[in-house]
Image 1 (cartoon, rainbow, N blue to C red):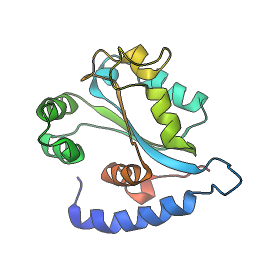
Image 2: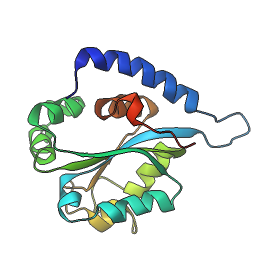
Image 3: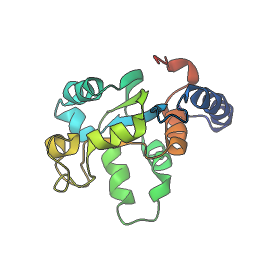
Image 4: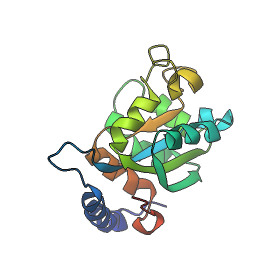
Length: 171
């Protein structure tokens, strides 16, 4: 599903595409960005997909790519490899392979920051009222959604799940 040799070529193509989409300038206008969002197995199982997507759209984010996938252990392990060796890694991989997920490319003004604000704190007990995690997450480990945290991470994560031709920029 995710061929490494093709991944390298696609990374270069998408990097160029992502960089060309950034239109912020010195007069403090927000920059157009893309980010990856994942609706995790717990939120998919609880039929929260539509409500979560509606929150993104109501807050100015647009979906430029979306699909439902079932990750296998290798894919989940590769995606979360940054956490390998941490105490929660094995449980995270097990959770992310427990059911289907919805992966989306979101775009818009300051999309990364906006997505992270909409998600709320990782721990739903500490998340602000009205955030996705406060409303839909059950625990710190079953926290409904994932979102990229930097432009560099967004680029890598988007390429993990999407071919460039699967992304339809709507800026």
